[in-house]
Amino acid sequence: MTDPLNAPTKARPGTRVHAILARMARQPYGMCGLAALLLIIVGAVVVPVLSPYSSTAQDLHATLLTPSARHWFGTDHLGRDLFVRVFEAARMTLFIGLGAALLGSLTGVTIGAVSGYLGGRWDFVIQRCTDALLSLPSMLLALALIAGLGSGVRNVIVAVGLGSVPEFVRLARSQTLTLRESGFVEAAHALGVSRPVILARHILPHLAPLAVVQATTQLGGAILTAAGLGFLGLGVPSDIPEWGAMAAEGRDLVFSDPLIVAVPGIAISLAVLAFNLLGDALRDALDPRLRHD
Image 1: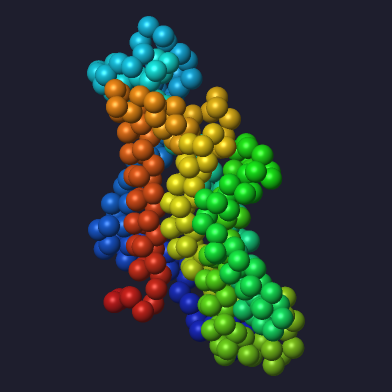
Image 2 (image 1 turned 120 degrees about the vertical axis):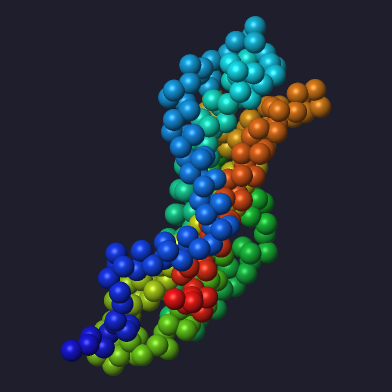
């Protein structure tokens, strides 16, 4: 007998994941984004381990070298190898981006689901607060949070993650307004299931695909915001390589040695583009209105 509290019968998880991957494989731009992302991840794992150079060791006799067989991207003003530093910095940048996207998605989706499901005064108050936060640029909101929390890796993750919460709230609320009128939610009401249980078992699981797509796309914005904070000297400590801080260190030499700024700038652009392309491909793969199989 079919359980009236659940949505229509779903495919097994393994089959569903395989179908999603198959649809993504038919998206050329999604595969390009995935390839770029894998390049960054593999480089971040392998290059700092295999390279004979340290990302922090200074060599004042080898400053501002041009690209060569020994230093593929050249060296900076302190003689540090740029090739190693850019991939070492990728570790921290991806860590901040993933942490911020996870924090923003979990917090925003939960608040948005509560707002859309409860409605009334709760919805009014939450949406007015969301409107106020959306009126501020994400960078400005992150700067305000950093000013209160202080710099540091954990505080950067919190500042960037909370800055993305309003977008998740709006998306989750709009989807919840549709879900709460669904048959399986009305059946749960009729059987006397409590509101917290309905939210946890029947609303939030249906918001997971939406959260995954938005979080993947938001990763690009989180990396860009974190790099902006690093460029302003408000990000991670100066002894930890980070793309924004690397660009800031070379801004005085941008005309004489542009590679010092270009290398981290290209890395930031590539990472943001990769996550945006991957997010678009995930959206197309998970949106039932765009499926042709």
